[in-house]
Every structure is written in C-alpha cells, then in structure tokens.
Image (cartoon, rainbow, N blue to C red; front, side):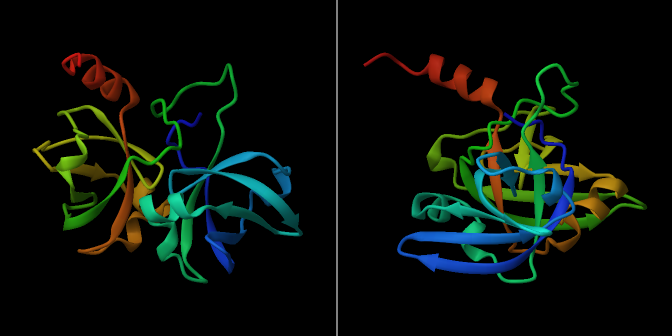
Length: 196
C-alpha cells in the first residue's frame, strides 16, 4: 500500500530482457535503505526488489505489467518516480494507492499558469474507469486532485515542488503516463453494476 507521495526520483541504469520479463536496474538515493523482497512503486507500479548492488537495485516487470503500464517504454537514463510502501501508523499524506495501475493515459495539454502548471490527460473510457471532480487520481505514482473531470479526460494542477521533484517536468503532449483510479471509487462503481 502506498500514499502517492513521491520520495525520490531514480535513474534507469540498465534494462535487461529475459523472456517476457524486463529486469530494471535503478540508481537511487533510497537504495541503501532497501532490502531484497521489499515493495517499491516505480511510476506508480508496485515491484519487488530482487537484488541490490551499491547505489543501485533491480526489480523485475513481467509481460502483463509491461503491456498495461509505461514501464515498457523506459530507456537507460530515464527518471522514474519512487515511493516505498507506507508504514502502518504514519500519516496518510496523499490517498490510498495500491500500486496496481489500471491503465495508461496520454498527456494532451500542458499550460504554465504564473508559477504553477495545468496538465490535461485523456484515457480510454471503454475500460470503465472514471474520475470525479475533486476526487483522487494517481499519475505515475503521484497522488493528485482531479479538476475538469470529463468522460475520458481530466486535469490536474501542479505546484512548483511537485513539478521540480517528479517526472511532471518531463511531460509533453503525447507523453504516456500510468493511471491508478481511486480505489474507493472503483468499489462504488462495482457495487452499482447490475447483478447478472
């Protein structure tokens, strides 16, 4: 379980394919605090640490994860948003995030607004995910509040701290992002489905 509050950026050091799997080695200031078999979110995707080597560690993404997220697009030198699993009893500064990406979305708008930024994203509505005005959304692991919620689009306002300390400063029109929709909203939507 995560909160959507990014702790650090990591840099992709190595990518190694093995069958349908992708081994991703990340250089990160968090490495010294990690242990093998620990969960850590990478652009919002919960992955398990499988090895540690000095200042870098390795995680493995299976083919299903690569198909449903933007991790398959990673290149050496890319930055990733990192968050370790929440500690029971700590403050929940963001919202409840599972680290299970529902689908990807595309950036369709970036507007600088006198010290902050407004980003607009679109997603495939046929997967039956939805946002609500002032509800929560996770974009590449970042917990945010939805504004301008539409049928298959939504916007988020980004403060300078978030812009400077996450991947938001690299997004351009067409950038692919991982989306995890609010877990409470998903349960409500499921309960509202007609019984079969």
